[in-house]
Image (cartoon, rainbow, N blue to C red):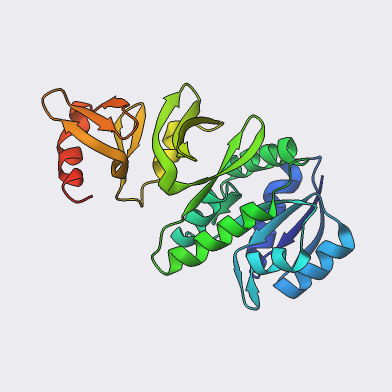
Length: 253
C-alpha cells in the first residue's frame, strides 16, 4: 500500500514514518509534502493508495487540497491536533481521522480500516458534508446532515429527519422519516460511537442504554410510566439514570 504524508509539521512526518514502517511492512511511504501546493503536485504524480492529510496548513486546509484534486482516487486519513470543529466534521462526513500525538494502536486500526475500504474511497458528497460541518462548527452551527456507513455503502441523512437511534448489538438502527414515511437504516457502528457524534446537540439525548432520542420528535412524556411517545407513535422507555435530565431538557426543547 503506497502512502503519501501531507503535513506542515516535520515532527509529524517523522512520528508517522517511525510508527508505520516497522509495524506495517505492506506500507511504503512514497513521498512527503509540507503544504497544500506540494501535496496536490505529489498526489497527482505518485497516485498513492492512502494519504495521511493534515487539516490546517499555512496555504490552506486538507479540504482545499481534496477539492483541487477533484475526485481523489486514494483513501484519506486526516490527522489533526485536538480540534473539535474538525473532529465533528469528520464524524458527520464518516471520514477517518487521527488526533496528534498519534497513538500506535489507533494508527494500526486506521490502517486496517484503510485496507478494507481502499475500493470504497470516499465520495465527494462526504467531503461536502465534512466541509459544511467544519465551517458550521467554526461558526458554532451544528451539522445538518450525517453520512452513515451501512453494509451496502454510504447513505446521507438529514439530522432533522431522525426520530431515534436504537442499539442493535454492534450496529445502530436509525429510525427516521422521509417523504412522510418512517424508515430504518442500519449503521455499521455501535450506539456508543453515535452518542459521541450527537453530544453537541441539545435536542439529541441518550435516554436508555439502547436508545438516543431526538427530543424534537417527542409528542408526549408519560411521566408515571417514564415513557416518551414520539410523533410516529413509537414509545421509548426512559431509564432512571436519565429521568431527571430528560424532564429538564424537554422543558427547553
